[in-house]
Length: 175
Image (cartoon, rainbow, N blue to C red; front, side, top):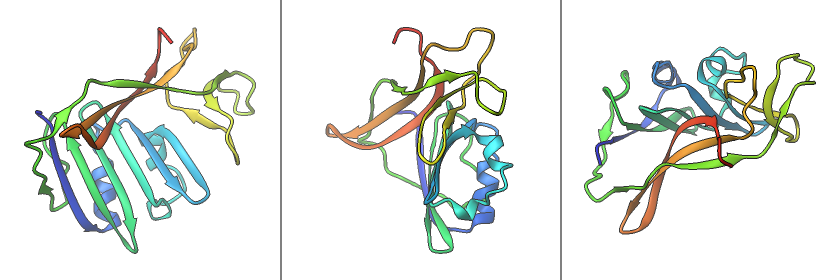
């Protein structure tokens, strides 16, 4: 396995914000009591909802995934680095991954449809969720994608899944 995996505990929100601005992170999946989002990372970072309101999240791209869990006033953070250096501004501890085995990439189909009549006037792929629609961050050109998928990679030790890494959101051709 050529990926490097790091963890850090008691990370202040200011340091986590710096890490989440890494240009390798294109998408974000984040959870809070009132909401779940899957969106473009830059859009999420510039939203009016502060990082401290989100209890868990994963920012990801093909070269890097950063996951975080809020613990009182700080965060536990994990990064899986495929290419480039580990994110800056955090005192990382390298995890022992000698026995980890990487599965092939898998595409998980996301339910939903291409919406052209939303009040935003911007066609999106989305799924009906309560309390609101969940738009998917996928490029929509002249011909919208027929299906949208979330690509992930699973890591195992002795056949048991230890974690997975989100890689990208993409159009699925043969669904």
